[in-house]
Length: 160
Image (cartoon, rainbow, N blue to C red; front, top):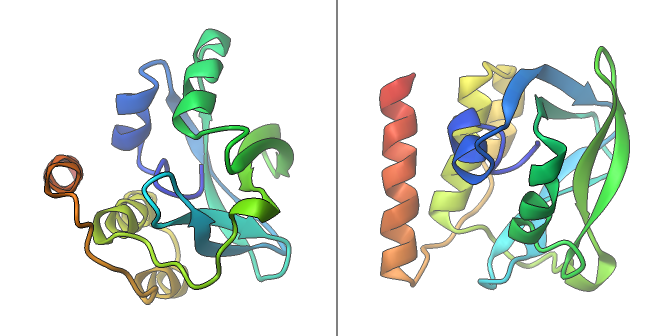
């Protein structure tokens, strides 16, 4: 996980069998918020053009992967790919397809904060957190979705 699923509370809400194993670095990569989500906002993506992207490595029951693929909209903007994470070996993650990359997009405030909370939970380096925190964001016009996600964020903050 490198985006909104970084924090275990977020991922286990989606995939109850997920168990955190640790964190790692994808060297030579950069984090972007330019994948067009189903809601029209910017979601996370990783490109092979940077200093590195920190990831959280989880295990989960194989039977739960199709559910996570559906949540992540595999085939509709994201594709599954293998990555090697030092200390963990081969893992899978999601990368945006070219058809769903829109560089002008910004994440909703709540989505951005999910990523920030994940970075804080894993105590990622201050300069990495500063880079993520500096990303421009926009307010989600859907009040119900906004409230639901901010409630999750508040529970994350209380648990740390």
